[in-house]
Image (cartoon, rainbow over all chains, first blue to last red; front, side, top):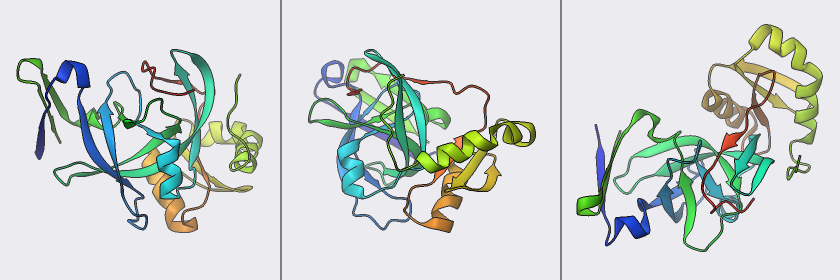
Length: 131
Length: 83
């Protein structure tokens, strides 16, 4: 089971974030390196619209979305490939929305770790994701 | 309902609506792949249907949709989502 452990200066403040590369599943688009946050409060993975636009991906579906500030917002879905720092590649159908702030451009939702082990170790400011 | 989806999949969504009853009878819970007014097929998983769409049509808009009576919204607790 390939595992990836990430150490941060302050896991509580930063959250379980890591740099990932996003691309299309055919590998035709130039990968976009983005900061991603593992978000167990997200049903599925979300990618910022501006990143999807850069990748030139066309939508493959739609979904209704509930957020703290809105209900039943219809958003597009995109087939994306996400490559972790250890080289593990994962494919999923992600939601495209605007993401507030400049730093986090991808929320890794519960669709990707659904077959993984996710260990959050606050004492050592590390988290581990194993597939 | 606030609807942010404009033109790219309008035709496919209309096709789904027209064929929804028939799809519910023969493929409830599966994922249907639609391009324009054509139903290409139904698949066991969303990823399978999306891959098939890419293989057949390339990187252009097409619709993969789960065949369900009522669409359940996806929940997000983060305030980072700008919707």
